[in-house]
Length: 148
Image (cartoon, rainbow, N blue to C red):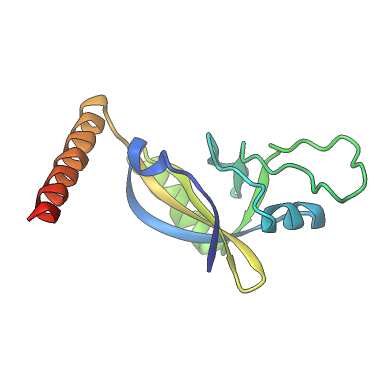
């Protein structure tokens, strides 16, 4: 499992409660572009529409060596492939508790491209500051232990 793209802000902006994996509906040139490492999950999110999940705002540029594609939008919504029971479970959880779906990473599993996303609860500003302070403290402790 090779990680192609990561959403670095996911764990900083959200508390991830549960993680799921899903396939993505892609065109041939998008697959080639992703496998060469040209994909970004920055500012992307997962939306629901008519009992289906979509990855929205993920930037996948056209494959450089492919011919010109008319009307290609690199950030168009891409359908996520999950079982109906999983989708119903996720939608029910989102509506009941006011949570959101956050893409975490894009990776390959054998020859397939998968998306790992999680159910997240947004952090407040003071939670983010506490996370930064905790990370700094751990870094200082590691430095001091290394010097001994």
